Image 1 (cartoon, rainbow, N blue to C red):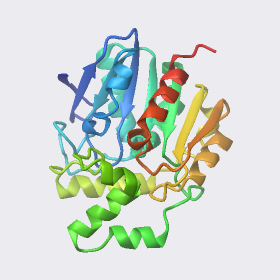
Image 2: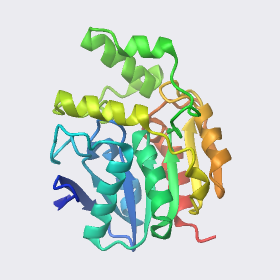
Image 3: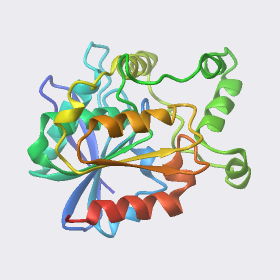
Length: 264
């Protein structure tokens, strides 16, 4: 996998990776506090049809990790656009999951002429309209025992049956080498995201994918997004949790590929 860098407008160096040989560019955006490895298990499902591009968010992976107030989801969207500029990708297909879906909302709203088709996975519009995870889930994630918190996160991502059959490694639990200040800033960025007012300006055909059993980012957010984005449709995957794209890969990847390949 090729690894190269681009320097964002504020001087932060962003690492990105390019694979695949397809004629169109597909930008894949990972979840909060994760680097490009979020997509490792499913990326090959797209490489045959697209040139896939991932990046390490600022604060993760091989990207710079400044302790500055520059991690808002709209800031991260600018980083992603800088990657597209570096690649000379005037238009792109865009697939963002979790916090990556929040960032993707800004890209699609701010650069409508550059996004051909959009997938928003397991994400939320944020703000006062977004539906937050329950207090029970929050408390379980906030326990002081790291092993217990990790197990809670695993069970929010995947069903117990899938976990029993797939002992790991897992690529959706966060970048283990991420410094504490960047992890905190990622958390704040997700919590403060609010794209509600700009969602109706998104012009790209949009698919919204969500697992029906997602408690980490409640499933009802999918319908909210669908109600705000004009050319959108919602696709729910029965029984899937937050990492639907991984656990339900055999269903989710063909669904996404078919949508991204359409020309209607």
